[in-house]
Image (tube, rainbow, N blue to C red; front, side, top):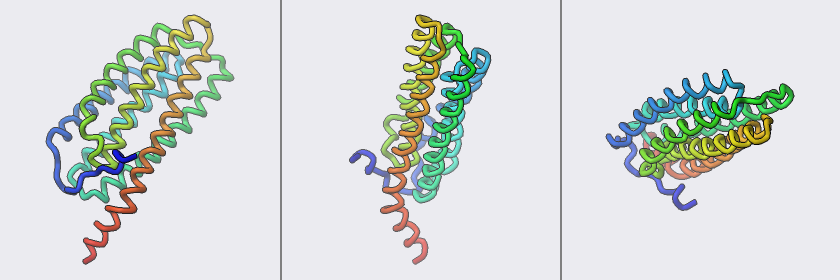
Length: 213
């Protein structure tokens, strides 16, 4: 947890490399949302749909991060709180989708699952590498890093799920990996909100007090 307590102490400073990395990640995530959601919808893969919605959520996160990048730390912390809550709601949505497709008995095509998941994995690794050195800047950038890390793990899981669907002829592996993605979202939500709680308890009150003097 010591790394989570490392935060930048120059509120308004904007790192040009950080901004460039966020823009690149935004474009990659929006592109992959379109590719993965359409593939998941047409194939009936809950895992791909869940990961696609996560791509869209990440794109929204990057947009928010760019919007508040030059603002005071307390505003970036407020945005991180919003993102943490959103990640938790996403986990709940995945749970509902799993229940629906369990009863529907959906069996997605493994070839589509595997190929799209590998493409998504490459995209997320690129994003994770670009954002890695900025992950301890503040709660906002920490949440961005957590999203990219979780997505890469999810893509690897979908590849294995595709192998499971191929070998078993059942959609259960797809539902299992969708559950993993939802669980990662819930875990990431807790991780981000813990960082937010720390910054609210330390830096944010000091900033508010300073503005009132």
